[in-house]
Length: 507
Image (cartoon, rainbow, N blue to C red; front, side, top):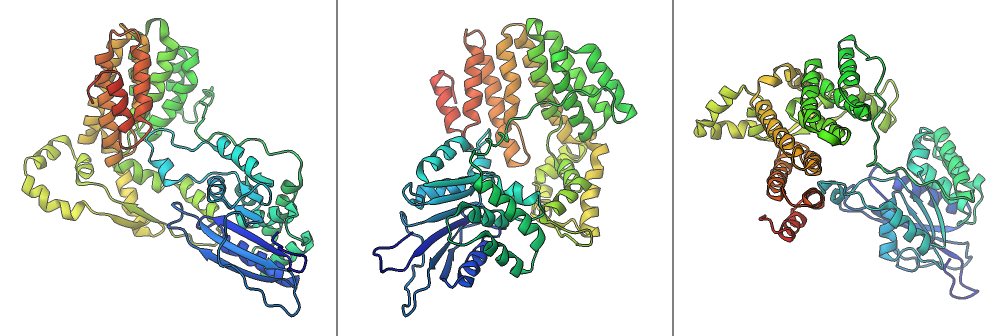
Protein backbone atom coordinates (compact mmCIF):
# COMPACT_ATOMS: atom_id res chain seq x y z
CA UNK A 1 0.00 0.00 0.00
CA UNK A 2 1.49 3.27 -1.14
CA UNK A 3 2.10 5.98 1.51
CA UNK A 4 5.18 8.19 1.17
CA UNK A 5 4.73 9.91 4.56
CA UNK A 6 2.39 9.64 7.57
CA UNK A 7 0.29 12.57 6.30
CA UNK A 8 -0.33 11.02 2.90
CA UNK A 9 -3.70 9.25 2.57
CA UNK A 10 -3.69 5.49 2.30
CA UNK A 11 -3.72 4.36 -1.34
CA UNK A 12 -4.22 0.81 -2.67
CA UNK A 13 -3.23 -0.11 -6.24
CA UNK A 14 -4.92 -3.10 -7.91
CA UNK A 15 -4.35 -4.60 -11.36
CA UNK A 16 -6.61 -7.21 -12.97
CA UNK A 17 -5.68 -9.34 -16.00
CA UNK A 18 -8.69 -11.05 -17.58
CA UNK A 19 -9.50 -12.64 -20.93
CA UNK A 20 -12.53 -11.82 -23.01
CA UNK A 21 -15.75 -13.22 -21.56
CA UNK A 22 -14.39 -13.67 -18.03
CA UNK A 23 -16.25 -10.74 -16.52
CA UNK A 24 -13.24 -8.55 -15.81
CA UNK A 25 -15.34 -5.41 -16.19
CA UNK A 26 -17.90 -6.72 -13.69
CA UNK A 27 -15.14 -7.49 -11.19
CA UNK A 28 -13.79 -3.95 -11.56
CA UNK A 29 -17.25 -2.46 -11.02
CA UNK A 30 -17.71 -4.52 -7.85
CA UNK A 31 -14.37 -3.40 -6.41
CA UNK A 32 -15.09 0.26 -7.21
CA UNK A 33 -18.59 0.01 -5.69
CA UNK A 34 -17.15 -1.69 -2.61
CA UNK A 35 -14.70 1.14 -2.01
CA UNK A 36 -17.13 3.96 -2.75
CA UNK A 37 -19.76 2.56 -0.39
CA UNK A 38 -17.08 2.66 2.32
CA UNK A 39 -16.38 6.32 1.55
CA UNK A 40 -13.15 5.76 -0.36
CA UNK A 41 -12.26 7.48 -3.63
CA UNK A 42 -11.95 4.99 -6.49
CA UNK A 43 -10.87 5.20 -10.12
CA UNK A 44 -10.58 2.47 -12.76
CA UNK A 45 -9.05 2.31 -16.24
CA UNK A 46 -8.49 -0.46 -18.77
CA UNK A 47 -6.24 -1.26 -21.70
CA UNK A 48 -7.72 -3.87 -24.03
CA UNK A 49 -5.67 -6.78 -25.32
CA UNK A 50 -5.24 -7.55 -29.01
CA UNK A 51 -7.80 -10.37 -28.94
CA UNK A 52 -9.48 -12.76 -26.55
CA UNK A 53 -6.44 -15.00 -26.23
CA UNK A 54 -3.52 -13.20 -27.84
CA UNK A 55 -3.62 -10.67 -25.01
CA UNK A 56 -5.56 -10.05 -21.81
CA UNK A 57 -7.27 -6.80 -20.91
CA UNK A 58 -5.41 -5.03 -18.11
CA UNK A 59 -7.66 -3.20 -15.66
CA UNK A 60 -6.16 -0.79 -13.15
CA UNK A 61 -7.87 0.47 -9.98
CA UNK A 62 -6.71 2.98 -7.39
CA UNK A 63 -8.47 3.24 -4.04
CA UNK A 64 -7.75 6.18 -1.70
CA UNK A 65 -9.11 6.40 1.84
CA UNK A 66 -11.34 9.36 2.78
CA UNK A 67 -9.30 12.57 2.75
CA UNK A 68 -11.39 15.62 3.78
CA UNK A 69 -10.29 18.77 1.98
CA UNK A 70 -7.97 16.98 -0.46
CA UNK A 71 -8.57 16.07 -4.10
CA UNK A 72 -6.29 13.19 -5.08
CA UNK A 73 -4.53 12.95 -8.44
CA UNK A 74 -4.65 9.30 -9.55
CA UNK A 75 -2.63 7.30 -12.06
CA UNK A 76 -4.03 5.95 -15.31
CA UNK A 77 -2.05 2.71 -15.55
CA UNK A 78 -0.32 0.15 -13.36
CA UNK A 79 3.39 0.75 -12.85
CA UNK A 80 5.91 -2.10 -12.37
CA UNK A 81 6.81 -2.45 -8.70
CA UNK A 82 3.80 -0.38 -7.57
CA UNK A 83 0.93 -2.90 -7.39
CA UNK A 84 -0.55 -4.02 -4.08
CA UNK A 85 -3.03 -6.60 -5.42
CA UNK A 86 -2.76 -8.44 -8.74
CA UNK A 87 -5.72 -10.56 -9.87
CA UNK A 88 -5.17 -12.90 -12.83
CA UNK A 89 -8.07 -14.88 -14.30
CA UNK A 90 -5.81 -17.53 -15.88
CA UNK A 91 -2.49 -19.12 -14.90
CA UNK A 92 -0.32 -17.90 -17.77
CA UNK A 93 -1.71 -14.38 -17.41
CA UNK A 94 -0.42 -14.47 -13.83
CA UNK A 95 2.98 -15.43 -15.23
CA UNK A 96 2.84 -12.55 -17.69
CA UNK A 97 2.02 -10.18 -14.84
CA UNK A 98 5.22 -11.28 -13.10
CA UNK A 99 7.10 -10.83 -16.37
CA UNK A 100 5.79 -7.25 -16.63
CA UNK A 101 7.00 -6.49 -13.12
CA UNK A 102 3.54 -6.04 -11.60
CA UNK A 103 4.21 -8.65 -8.88
CA UNK A 104 6.91 -8.02 -6.26
CA UNK A 105 7.77 -10.13 -3.19
CA UNK A 106 7.82 -7.21 -0.76
CA UNK A 107 4.39 -5.90 -1.66
CA UNK A 108 2.01 -7.79 -3.95
CA UNK A 109 -0.84 -10.10 -2.99
CA UNK A 110 -1.34 -12.30 -6.05
CA UNK A 111 -4.76 -13.86 -6.60
CA UNK A 112 -4.95 -16.21 -9.58
CA UNK A 113 -6.86 -19.07 -11.15
CA UNK A 114 -4.69 -22.07 -12.03
CA UNK A 115 -6.91 -23.28 -14.88
CA UNK A 116 -5.60 -23.02 -18.45
CA UNK A 117 -6.94 -21.39 -21.59
CA UNK A 118 -4.41 -22.37 -24.21
CA UNK A 119 -2.78 -19.61 -26.24
CA UNK A 120 -2.48 -19.47 -30.01
CA UNK A 121 1.24 -20.29 -29.74
CA UNK A 122 0.52 -23.40 -27.65
CA UNK A 123 -2.08 -24.63 -30.14
CA UNK A 124 0.18 -24.08 -33.14
CA UNK A 125 2.82 -26.56 -31.97
CA UNK A 126 2.30 -29.91 -33.78
CA UNK A 127 2.94 -31.88 -30.58
CA UNK A 128 2.38 -30.94 -26.95
CA UNK A 129 2.93 -27.19 -26.90
CA UNK A 130 1.36 -26.64 -23.48
CA UNK A 131 3.53 -24.40 -21.31
CA UNK A 132 4.99 -25.80 -18.08
CA UNK A 133 2.44 -24.88 -15.39
CA UNK A 134 4.62 -26.10 -12.52
CA UNK A 135 7.45 -23.79 -13.56
CA UNK A 136 5.05 -20.84 -13.61
CA UNK A 137 3.65 -21.77 -10.19
CA UNK A 138 7.15 -21.87 -8.72
CA UNK A 139 7.81 -18.35 -10.01
CA UNK A 140 4.48 -17.09 -8.65
CA UNK A 141 5.33 -18.40 -5.17
CA UNK A 142 8.78 -16.84 -5.34
CA UNK A 143 7.73 -13.40 -6.59
CA UNK A 144 4.57 -12.68 -4.58
CA UNK A 145 4.24 -11.58 -0.97
CA UNK A 146 1.03 -13.61 -0.62
CA UNK A 147 -0.32 -16.12 -3.13
CA UNK A 148 -3.97 -17.19 -3.34
CA UNK A 149 -4.42 -19.69 -6.16
CA UNK A 150 -6.93 -22.37 -7.10
CA UNK A 151 -9.15 -23.34 -10.02
CA UNK A 152 -11.42 -20.32 -9.70
CA UNK A 153 -13.09 -21.15 -13.01
CA UNK A 154 -14.24 -24.61 -11.88
CA UNK A 155 -15.21 -23.26 -8.47
CA UNK A 156 -17.52 -20.68 -10.09
CA UNK A 157 -18.96 -22.92 -12.80
CA UNK A 158 -19.83 -25.65 -10.29
CA UNK A 159 -22.03 -23.09 -8.53
CA UNK A 160 -23.65 -21.74 -11.67
CA UNK A 161 -21.64 -18.53 -11.69
CA UNK A 162 -18.68 -17.01 -13.55
CA UNK A 163 -15.05 -16.58 -12.56
CA UNK A 164 -15.42 -12.90 -11.63
CA UNK A 165 -17.49 -13.94 -8.59
CA UNK A 166 -14.93 -16.43 -7.30
CA UNK A 167 -12.06 -13.98 -7.83
CA UNK A 168 -14.02 -11.35 -5.89
CA UNK A 169 -14.46 -13.87 -3.08
CA UNK A 170 -10.76 -14.73 -3.11
CA UNK A 171 -10.01 -11.02 -2.78
CA UNK A 172 -12.34 -10.86 0.22
CA UNK A 173 -10.72 -13.87 1.85
CA UNK A 174 -7.17 -12.66 1.24
CA UNK A 175 -7.50 -9.72 3.63
CA UNK A 176 -5.73 -7.47 1.13
CA UNK A 177 -8.49 -4.84 1.32
CA UNK A 178 -9.72 -3.20 4.55
CA UNK A 179 -13.33 -4.26 4.02
CA UNK A 180 -15.36 -7.05 5.63
CA UNK A 181 -16.85 -10.07 3.89
CA UNK A 182 -20.30 -8.66 4.61
CA UNK A 183 -19.40 -5.54 2.63
CA UNK A 184 -18.24 -7.68 -0.29
CA UNK A 185 -21.48 -9.66 -0.23
CA UNK A 186 -23.56 -6.48 -0.06
CA UNK A 187 -22.03 -5.27 -3.33
CA UNK A 188 -23.01 -8.52 -5.09
CA UNK A 189 -26.52 -8.36 -3.66
CA UNK A 190 -26.95 -4.78 -4.86
CA UNK A 191 -25.93 -5.76 -8.40
CA UNK A 192 -29.23 -7.62 -8.73
CA UNK A 193 -28.03 -10.09 -11.39
CA UNK A 194 -27.27 -13.74 -10.65
CA UNK A 195 -27.06 -12.92 -6.96
CA UNK A 196 -27.55 -16.40 -5.49
CA UNK A 197 -24.92 -18.28 -7.56
CA UNK A 198 -22.50 -15.35 -7.35
CA UNK A 199 -22.73 -15.33 -3.55
CA UNK A 200 -22.20 -19.10 -3.49
CA UNK A 201 -19.04 -18.75 -5.59
CA UNK A 202 -17.85 -15.79 -3.49
CA UNK A 203 -18.23 -17.66 -0.20
CA UNK A 204 -16.51 -20.77 -1.54
CA UNK A 205 -13.57 -18.66 -2.74
CA UNK A 206 -13.31 -16.96 0.66
CA UNK A 207 -12.75 -20.41 2.13
CA UNK A 208 -10.11 -21.18 -0.49
CA UNK A 209 -8.24 -17.96 0.29
CA UNK A 210 -8.28 -18.57 4.03
CA UNK A 211 -7.13 -22.19 4.05
CA UNK A 212 -3.57 -22.86 5.12
CA UNK A 213 -2.57 -25.67 2.75
CA UNK A 214 -1.92 -25.08 -0.97
CA UNK A 215 -4.30 -26.64 -3.50
CA UNK A 216 -3.37 -29.99 -5.08
CA UNK A 217 -1.58 -29.68 -8.43
CA UNK A 218 -3.87 -29.52 -11.45
CA UNK A 219 -4.07 -32.65 -13.59
CA UNK A 220 -2.01 -32.65 -16.76
CA UNK A 221 -4.55 -32.10 -19.58
CA UNK A 222 -2.33 -34.03 -22.00
CA UNK A 223 -2.23 -37.26 -19.96
CA UNK A 224 -5.03 -39.74 -20.56
CA UNK A 225 -5.46 -43.42 -19.82
CA UNK A 226 -7.48 -45.95 -21.77
CA UNK A 227 -10.78 -46.94 -20.21
CA UNK A 228 -11.24 -50.58 -19.20
CA UNK A 229 -12.67 -52.80 -21.92
CA UNK A 230 -16.38 -53.31 -21.08
CA UNK A 231 -17.78 -56.80 -20.58
CA UNK A 232 -20.85 -56.08 -22.66
CA UNK A 233 -21.29 -53.74 -25.62
CA UNK A 234 -23.92 -51.03 -25.58
CA UNK A 235 -25.33 -52.31 -28.88
CA UNK A 236 -25.78 -55.93 -29.93
CA UNK A 237 -23.89 -55.44 -33.20
CA UNK A 238 -20.75 -54.41 -31.33
CA UNK A 239 -20.49 -57.43 -29.03
CA UNK A 240 -18.64 -59.56 -31.63
CA UNK A 241 -15.93 -56.89 -31.72
CA UNK A 242 -15.37 -57.12 -27.95
CA UNK A 243 -15.37 -60.92 -28.10
CA UNK A 244 -12.82 -60.82 -30.92
CA UNK A 245 -10.51 -58.56 -28.89
CA UNK A 246 -10.55 -60.93 -25.92
CA UNK A 247 -10.08 -63.98 -28.12
CA UNK A 248 -7.33 -62.83 -30.48
CA UNK A 249 -5.24 -60.13 -28.79
CA UNK A 250 -2.91 -59.95 -25.75
CA UNK A 251 -4.61 -58.68 -22.59
CA UNK A 252 -2.31 -55.64 -22.07
CA UNK A 253 -3.72 -54.21 -25.31
CA UNK A 254 -7.42 -54.81 -24.60
CA UNK A 255 -8.18 -51.38 -23.19
CA UNK A 256 -6.50 -49.56 -26.08
CA UNK A 257 -8.25 -51.79 -28.59
CA UNK A 258 -11.55 -50.95 -26.90
CA UNK A 259 -10.81 -47.25 -27.29
CA UNK A 260 -9.90 -47.80 -30.93
CA UNK A 261 -13.10 -49.71 -31.62
CA UNK A 262 -15.17 -46.96 -30.01
CA UNK A 263 -13.46 -44.38 -32.19
CA UNK A 264 -13.69 -46.08 -35.58
CA UNK A 265 -17.24 -47.37 -35.09
CA UNK A 266 -18.38 -43.90 -34.07
CA UNK A 267 -16.58 -42.60 -37.16
CA UNK A 268 -18.08 -45.12 -39.62
CA UNK A 269 -19.78 -48.40 -38.62
CA UNK A 270 -19.26 -51.84 -37.05
CA UNK A 271 -17.82 -53.29 -40.27
CA UNK A 272 -15.15 -50.59 -40.12
CA UNK A 273 -14.39 -51.84 -36.61
CA UNK A 274 -13.66 -55.30 -37.99
CA UNK A 275 -11.37 -53.75 -40.63
CA UNK A 276 -9.55 -52.01 -37.79
CA UNK A 277 -9.02 -55.27 -35.90
CA UNK A 278 -7.82 -56.94 -39.11
CA UNK A 279 -5.06 -54.34 -39.49
CA UNK A 280 -4.00 -54.52 -35.84
CA UNK A 281 -3.98 -58.32 -36.16
CA UNK A 282 -1.54 -58.15 -39.06
CA UNK A 283 0.86 -56.12 -36.92
CA UNK A 284 0.46 -58.57 -34.04
CA UNK A 285 1.28 -61.50 -36.32
CA UNK A 286 4.59 -59.86 -37.28
CA UNK A 287 5.55 -58.59 -33.81
CA UNK A 288 7.58 -61.52 -32.49
CA UNK A 289 8.78 -60.97 -28.90
CA UNK A 290 7.38 -57.43 -28.62
CA UNK A 291 3.76 -58.43 -29.19
CA UNK A 292 2.17 -56.44 -26.35
CA UNK A 293 4.03 -53.19 -27.03
CA UNK A 294 3.56 -53.38 -30.79
CA UNK A 295 -0.14 -54.20 -30.45
CA UNK A 296 -0.77 -51.29 -28.06
CA UNK A 297 0.90 -48.79 -30.39
CA UNK A 298 -0.85 -50.26 -33.42
CA UNK A 299 -4.20 -50.10 -31.61
CA UNK A 300 -3.67 -46.41 -30.84
CA UNK A 301 -2.37 -45.10 -34.12
CA UNK A 302 -4.27 -47.25 -36.61
CA UNK A 303 -7.48 -45.97 -35.00
CA UNK A 304 -6.26 -42.40 -35.47
CA UNK A 305 -5.34 -43.06 -39.10
CA UNK A 306 -8.68 -44.69 -39.91
CA UNK A 307 -10.69 -41.83 -38.38
CA UNK A 308 -9.10 -39.04 -40.43
CA UNK A 309 -10.80 -35.65 -40.36
CA UNK A 310 -12.87 -34.79 -43.42
CA UNK A 311 -15.80 -32.48 -44.16
CA UNK A 312 -18.24 -35.27 -43.27
CA UNK A 313 -16.68 -35.77 -39.84
CA UNK A 314 -16.54 -32.06 -39.05
CA UNK A 315 -20.20 -31.59 -40.01
CA UNK A 316 -21.18 -34.60 -37.89
CA UNK A 317 -19.36 -33.37 -34.77
CA UNK A 318 -20.72 -29.83 -35.05
CA UNK A 319 -24.36 -30.98 -35.15
CA UNK A 320 -24.36 -33.55 -32.35
CA UNK A 321 -26.77 -33.13 -29.48
CA UNK A 322 -24.06 -33.45 -26.82
CA UNK A 323 -22.17 -30.53 -28.39
CA UNK A 324 -25.27 -28.36 -28.27
CA UNK A 325 -25.83 -29.34 -24.63
CA UNK A 326 -22.21 -28.48 -23.79
CA UNK A 327 -22.50 -25.06 -25.41
CA UNK A 328 -25.66 -24.35 -23.42
CA UNK A 329 -23.92 -25.35 -20.19
CA UNK A 330 -20.93 -23.16 -20.96
CA UNK A 331 -23.05 -20.04 -21.49
CA UNK A 332 -25.37 -20.86 -18.56
CA UNK A 333 -28.50 -21.02 -20.73
CA UNK A 334 -31.83 -21.86 -19.14
CA UNK A 335 -34.28 -24.31 -20.71
CA UNK A 336 -36.28 -21.49 -22.32
CA UNK A 337 -33.27 -19.64 -23.74
CA UNK A 338 -32.37 -19.77 -27.44
CA UNK A 339 -28.61 -20.12 -27.93
CA UNK A 340 -27.27 -19.07 -31.32
CA UNK A 341 -24.11 -20.60 -32.77
CA UNK A 342 -22.19 -19.64 -35.89
CA UNK A 343 -19.85 -22.18 -37.46
CA UNK A 344 -17.12 -21.13 -39.87
CA UNK A 345 -16.41 -23.54 -42.72
CA UNK A 346 -13.72 -23.10 -45.34
CA UNK A 347 -13.13 -26.43 -47.11
CA UNK A 348 -10.70 -26.24 -50.02
CA UNK A 349 -11.71 -27.36 -53.49
CA UNK A 350 -9.50 -30.43 -53.03
CA UNK A 351 -11.46 -31.43 -49.91
CA UNK A 352 -14.78 -31.06 -51.69
CA UNK A 353 -13.47 -33.12 -54.60
CA UNK A 354 -12.30 -35.69 -52.07
CA UNK A 355 -15.95 -36.43 -51.31
CA UNK A 356 -16.59 -37.44 -54.93
CA UNK A 357 -16.16 -40.96 -56.30
CA UNK A 358 -12.57 -41.43 -57.40
CA UNK A 359 -13.43 -41.71 -61.09
CA UNK A 360 -15.39 -38.46 -61.12
CA UNK A 361 -12.72 -36.60 -59.12
CA UNK A 362 -10.00 -37.85 -61.47
CA UNK A 363 -12.09 -36.74 -64.46
CA UNK A 364 -12.32 -33.23 -62.99
CA UNK A 365 -8.56 -33.18 -62.50
CA UNK A 366 -8.20 -33.70 -66.24
CA UNK A 367 -10.14 -30.47 -66.88
CA UNK A 368 -8.14 -27.67 -65.20
CA UNK A 369 -10.25 -24.93 -66.81
CA UNK A 370 -13.41 -26.41 -65.34
CA UNK A 371 -11.73 -26.62 -61.92
CA UNK A 372 -10.68 -22.99 -62.23
CA UNK A 373 -14.30 -21.97 -62.87
CA UNK A 374 -15.59 -24.07 -59.96
CA UNK A 375 -12.98 -22.85 -57.50
CA UNK A 376 -14.47 -19.35 -56.81
CA UNK A 377 -17.87 -20.92 -56.14
CA UNK A 378 -16.67 -23.72 -53.86
CA UNK A 379 -13.33 -22.66 -52.37
CA UNK A 380 -14.57 -19.94 -50.00
CA UNK A 381 -15.43 -19.48 -46.36
CA UNK A 382 -18.98 -20.01 -45.15
CA UNK A 383 -20.66 -18.91 -41.94
CA UNK A 384 -23.40 -21.37 -41.01
CA UNK A 385 -25.86 -20.71 -38.18
CA UNK A 386 -26.50 -24.18 -36.82
CA UNK A 387 -29.25 -23.00 -34.45
CA UNK A 388 -31.44 -22.32 -37.50
CA UNK A 389 -33.27 -25.06 -39.39
CA UNK A 390 -31.55 -24.19 -42.67
CA UNK A 391 -28.05 -24.15 -41.20
CA UNK A 392 -28.57 -27.34 -39.20
CA UNK A 393 -29.95 -29.22 -42.21
CA UNK A 394 -27.01 -28.10 -44.36
CA UNK A 395 -24.53 -29.69 -41.98
CA UNK A 396 -26.69 -32.75 -41.34
CA UNK A 397 -26.80 -33.34 -45.10
CA UNK A 398 -22.99 -33.26 -45.16
CA UNK A 399 -22.81 -35.58 -42.15
CA UNK A 400 -25.26 -37.93 -43.86
CA UNK A 401 -22.70 -38.62 -46.59
CA UNK A 402 -20.92 -40.94 -44.15
CA UNK A 403 -22.47 -43.97 -45.86
CA UNK A 404 -20.80 -42.94 -49.13
CA UNK A 405 -17.40 -42.25 -47.56
CA UNK A 406 -15.89 -45.61 -48.57
CA UNK A 407 -16.48 -44.80 -52.24
CA UNK A 408 -14.83 -41.38 -52.10
CA UNK A 409 -11.43 -40.47 -53.51
CA UNK A 410 -10.26 -39.16 -50.12
CA UNK A 411 -11.00 -42.51 -48.47
CA UNK A 412 -9.15 -44.42 -51.18
CA UNK A 413 -6.11 -42.17 -50.75
CA UNK A 414 -6.13 -42.41 -46.95
CA UNK A 415 -6.46 -46.20 -46.94
CA UNK A 416 -3.69 -46.58 -49.52
CA UNK A 417 -1.42 -44.37 -47.40
CA UNK A 418 -2.37 -46.32 -44.25
CA UNK A 419 -1.69 -49.72 -45.78
CA UNK A 420 1.67 -48.62 -47.21
CA UNK A 421 2.69 -47.44 -43.73
CA UNK A 422 1.61 -50.71 -42.11
CA UNK A 423 3.43 -52.74 -44.75
CA UNK A 424 6.61 -50.85 -43.86
CA UNK A 425 5.97 -51.44 -40.14
CA UNK A 426 5.50 -55.18 -40.68
CA UNK A 427 8.69 -55.35 -42.76
CA UNK A 428 10.69 -53.58 -40.05
CA UNK A 429 9.24 -55.73 -37.24
CA UNK A 430 11.19 -58.70 -38.55
CA UNK A 431 14.45 -56.67 -38.59
CA UNK A 432 14.28 -54.08 -35.79
CA UNK A 433 11.17 -54.19 -33.62
CA UNK A 434 12.01 -50.99 -31.74
CA UNK A 435 12.38 -49.07 -35.02
CA UNK A 436 9.02 -50.45 -36.21
CA UNK A 437 7.31 -49.42 -32.98
CA UNK A 438 8.76 -45.92 -33.27
CA UNK A 439 7.43 -45.74 -36.83
CA UNK A 440 3.97 -46.62 -35.49
CA UNK A 441 4.23 -43.71 -33.04
CA UNK A 442 5.17 -41.34 -35.87
CA UNK A 443 1.52 -41.40 -36.99
CA UNK A 444 0.94 -38.83 -34.26
CA UNK A 445 2.18 -36.20 -36.72
CA UNK A 446 -0.86 -36.57 -39.01
CA UNK A 447 -3.86 -34.69 -37.64
CA UNK A 448 -6.52 -32.14 -38.51
CA UNK A 449 -7.61 -31.35 -42.04
CA UNK A 450 -6.82 -28.96 -44.88
CA UNK A 451 -3.37 -27.31 -44.59
CA UNK A 452 -2.75 -28.77 -41.11
CA UNK A 453 -3.24 -32.31 -42.44
CA UNK A 454 -1.04 -31.62 -45.46
CA UNK A 455 1.85 -30.35 -43.31
CA UNK A 456 1.60 -33.27 -40.90
CA UNK A 457 1.44 -35.82 -43.73
CA UNK A 458 4.53 -34.30 -45.35
CA UNK A 459 6.54 -34.64 -42.13
CA UNK A 460 5.24 -38.15 -41.53
CA UNK A 461 6.33 -39.21 -45.02
CA UNK A 462 9.79 -37.74 -44.34
CA UNK A 463 10.08 -39.76 -41.11
CA UNK A 464 8.97 -42.89 -42.92
CA UNK A 465 11.82 -42.38 -45.40
CA UNK A 466 14.15 -41.73 -42.46
CA UNK A 467 13.14 -45.07 -40.93
CA UNK A 468 14.28 -46.83 -44.10
CA UNK A 469 17.54 -44.84 -44.12
CA UNK A 470 18.20 -45.61 -40.44
CA UNK A 471 17.49 -49.34 -40.74
CA UNK A 472 20.55 -51.34 -39.79
CA UNK A 473 21.98 -48.79 -37.38
CA UNK A 474 22.25 -50.04 -33.78
CA UNK A 475 20.42 -46.94 -32.47
CA UNK A 476 17.87 -46.67 -35.29
CA UNK A 477 14.79 -46.79 -33.04
CA UNK A 478 16.07 -44.15 -30.63
CA UNK A 479 17.14 -41.94 -33.55
CA UNK A 480 13.69 -42.10 -35.15
CA UNK A 481 12.16 -41.26 -31.77
CA UNK A 482 14.33 -38.14 -31.58
CA UNK A 483 13.26 -37.17 -35.09
CA UNK A 484 9.60 -37.55 -34.14
CA UNK A 485 9.97 -35.37 -31.06
CA UNK A 486 11.80 -32.75 -33.13
CA UNK A 487 9.00 -32.77 -35.72
CA UNK A 488 6.47 -32.14 -32.94
CA UNK A 489 8.31 -29.14 -31.51
CA UNK A 490 7.49 -26.38 -33.97
CA UNK A 491 5.19 -25.76 -36.91
CA UNK A 492 7.97 -24.42 -39.16
CA UNK A 493 10.04 -27.62 -39.11
CA UNK A 494 13.33 -26.03 -38.01
CA UNK A 495 13.90 -28.54 -35.18
CA UNK A 496 13.30 -31.50 -37.52
CA UNK A 497 15.71 -30.13 -40.12
CA UNK A 498 18.39 -29.66 -37.47
CA UNK A 499 17.93 -33.20 -36.12
CA UNK A 500 18.06 -34.69 -39.61
CA UNK A 501 21.34 -32.86 -40.19
CA UNK A 502 22.72 -34.16 -36.88
CA UNK A 503 21.96 -37.72 -37.96
CA UNK A 504 23.52 -37.18 -41.37
CA UNK A 505 20.21 -37.45 -43.24
CA UNK A 506 18.96 -35.15 -45.98
CA UNK A 507 16.16 -32.71 -45.09
